[in-house]
Image: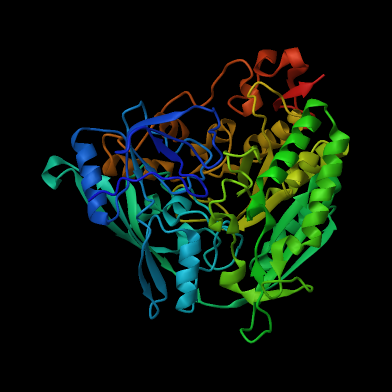
Length: 564
């Protein structure tokens, strides 16, 4: 039996349907808005609870050639990966495909359904003395969702920090011919080249039902966060990841500071029971969120760069005093290094555990309250090129030191290491990932303070330095020509054709991103303000508000919305 249920719990379910039997639905992401702010509609949502039910769902839809999209419990992807075409599509939620199926201590592996969260996996593996060596820092992702978009932690060691590179077996349900009852379960194992297509699939190959991941025996880490001047960051970025297994950076360009994460394994008998509970992932009082958002909106409306920089320094100093959420014993921070078991420090996200309290508290980005609303520009640059990119950003800061204070309000630029992957749509070379979060107006026609600087950073990354986009984040411009940067893209598309000849799991958006259709760039009035286009005319900016399309300040090929 398909369990038909859509209910609100913290955070809110991204699927909403008009009727109790889950017809006439809409879907959004956890932030309440896609890059183009469109509303994605579907004819029906289903919530299978077993692989058998999932096969039945796919078969029934394939038989009538109905478009399908896989959705997750929290729907964290910013681009429109979950949107089926038209209004009659089928949403297949993995919300109740959330069981740990097997922990194999002898072979050090874990098999889970695709709707299991990273938090569940970490917790269950630890009970058997095992850990996933590398993972994203936010534990609210589902395993199916995070491998589908290539989510990762930070490391150049072992197989690297991408979870999809630790898959040893994957089961995926795909459409099939009538002779196969319209659906097929495919079991892919290491050595099968089709697994390299399925490792990062954007959801266009079918529905992943089960994943087996390679684990390691539990170990301890020692973490020291060290704040330094960013003058030699370009040189350090190229080598730091080889020195420290879990090393990363948090860069505050306008303050010319960077926090180095010196993070390595230590012997299991090293004293310490540290815990990571990052403040940005905790439940926050809705009143506090509203005050902070209103303050930033006022600063934007008044072009108050000084106020923004003052707020940014307060934010970063508060995080520093609180040791960025690290404690030595689960309660208090007494000093570095913080030593703790890997499963206690590798990820966090306690706002997911919040009780229903009429939204007195919420995750900071919960769209039901007045809180964070932001753009994310996230990309990876080959290690051989990162020095040049970092130095170009520093040149922009030299031109206007206040221009990038907005980044510090969102805890700076998080920089994490990645290794080259066998996944066809995975990392192509050893690289450094830059995760940039910044203010987004509720009004799509309202320009941002120092908008031109951030647009130039974005275009520097993708077009001068050939950066690869994070598939689950970014604005439309990040995906311009992106598929051409993947040398095995053709192999991926061949597997896609084999698994889903009718394109039932594809949509206009995924076809555009994969280079199969035009229309990725939306040219209209104000389109550059939201990253829907790169401006070529003043009307793409906000000329009535004093923002005009002009060349970049140091990257002359850039076209950005500049306030004159």
